[in-house]
Structures are given as C-alpha cells and as structure tokens.
Length: 115
Image (cartoon, rainbow, N blue to C red; front, side, top):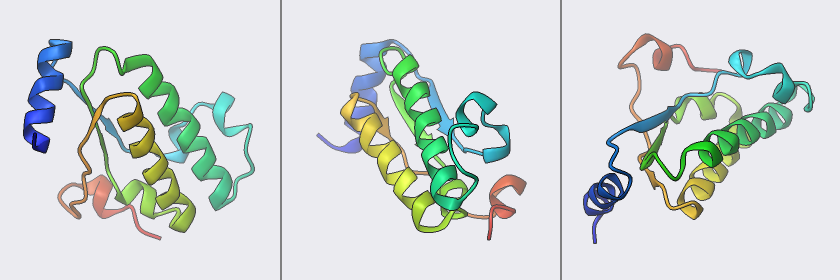
C-alpha cells in the first residue's frame, strides 16, 4: 500500500478528510507549556514536542493526518529537527498519516522562518 492509499484508508476510517497543520510558533504556545522549559533551543523543542503530542493525543481517533511544516522546526536547529522527527514518529505510532510540508517561500510565514 502506498502513501496515498494509506491516507485514503485513514480518511475512510475516520470519515474525515481533515489534516492538522503543525506550524509551531514558540511565541504562540500556551504558557502552561512554555513555562516548563528553559528558553533555549532544546527547551523550545521540548515545548513544541509536548504541545504537538497533546494535539495528536486529542485528535488521532478522529483526524487522519498531520502536516508539519519543516521550516518551523528548522529554525530551532538540531533540537528543532529532533522535535520534527519526534512529532512524526509519535503521530505514526498513533496511526496517523504524516505529510511532511517541506516547501519554502510559498507564503509569508514559511518565507520568514529562518535563523
């Protein structure tokens, strides 16, 4: 079964074509998450992972897929890329399809997510 077949099957299972876009902006994460971690690259990545996992936990039974935008993870260097990898791993573990959004400069938010 290829990736498209997997997505179609998950849409049928959930009866829902919705995909959750995960474009984490540290400044928009809830304080109850960010206050737990130091404001370092590693701390920001841990906050993103916690927040993403909470979204996945709340939706994996009713939403078939996630679509993390890699530019929002890359801006936090290696820790951010680890957060991207952990987010993808966790979503797959929960049975979600992962669609990696790796385009650049198509809209303002991805064009401005640089170091």
